[in-house]
Image 1: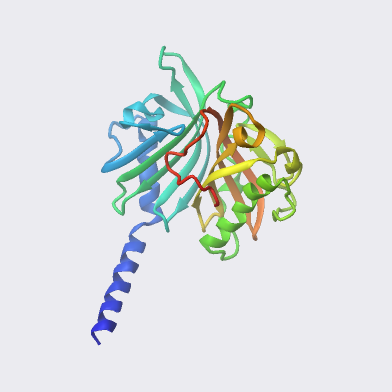
Image 2: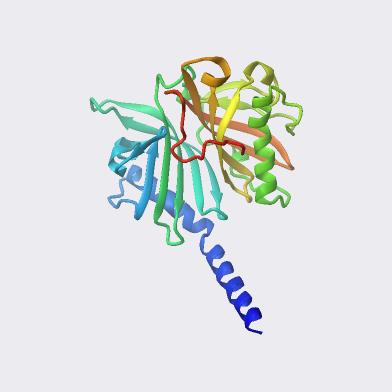
Length: 284
């Protein structure tokens, strides 16, 4: 009887803990990141042990990040993934930022990942900040304003988080194998990299881009079917280059198939590469 009572209490506690991390709480956490872009004066609430990074560099304070010098949104294009099971939210957005050495403003392609407590306090903030010169591809003016409805429309079906992540992970695995035959795709599946559309077919030409894809981490939205995957394309190990490619890729999955990819990406030097958030395995 005591065992039954203990198990019941544990189940109730687990249920309450899980339910406390809601979409609303996570959206408010993200809104606190963008509030200053709408002239709000309040700052986000950070947990005492908050961990911050930008472009895979650990930061000592929020004011050292792109959050501090982003003055406004460049457009209303945005893609959001809300993962209530991991209490994490990610958003692809376009910002307008002041340069460190001047008051001149310039566009930035940004991907922001926030992990929060049940109260909405940030425990993790990870920013991928892409500026002109970060990569050959950089066309912030090419994005629609706002994002196509595809990215915010609830997806039909009832795929679980592991099922959605498994489907998304087939894409980097296909790149690593140089073979896209295992990737399920819809009738169209455009891939857009920093505003440049590179293909209308997710699986086309992967043999030409065959390379090791490490440090796979995920934010999975089971309602919208949007998944954010953080990856490192290990070009030094795969192709002997002196730089690799750090990406946040946003996938849209409908009926178990990929129907769109939006990638924010930046070249990163430094060999060997170590993800400040990952364990180095990158198995996905």
